[in-house]
Length: 173
Image (tube, rainbow, N blue to C red; front, side, top):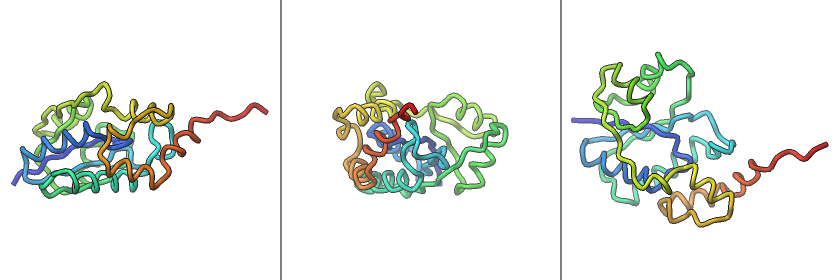
C-alpha cells in the first residue's frame, strides 16, 4: 500500500490545493495532509487556526470526490530544518512518498531518503492563499476560488472580519 504526504499552510484551503490532493489520490492508496505552521493563527498571513483549517480540508475532501482514505495532521514549526523531517514523521502515520513544490521541503525529504514528487500547481496566479486573503481584505470576490465547504467554514468563524481586524493598524496615541 502506498501512502503519500503533502504539506501546506492552507490559509485557506483553496481550489488549487483541492486539485493537488485529487491528483495525489490518483497515485496513492492513502493520503496524509499535513497542516504546516499549525501553531500560528490570528495573523495577516495566517488568520485561521489549525482546527479551522482541519475542518476546511475535511469538509472539502469529503464533498469533492476524494475517495481515498486520508489523514489530516497538524504540524507545528520547530525552527530546526535538520530535524524537521523527523518531527513530521513523529506526528504522522508512516508514508512512502512526498508531494510538494516547496524547494526546502523537497530538499529535506530527499535528504531523508523519501521519494519526492513535484506537486502540480493549479492556476497559481489566482489560486494562492495570498491572493485569496487580499481579496477578502479588499472586499473582492473570493468564494469561487475555494471549495464551497471552505467558504462556509470561513463564514462560520467570521474569518473575513477577523482578517480585516488584523489588518487595522494601531491608532497613533
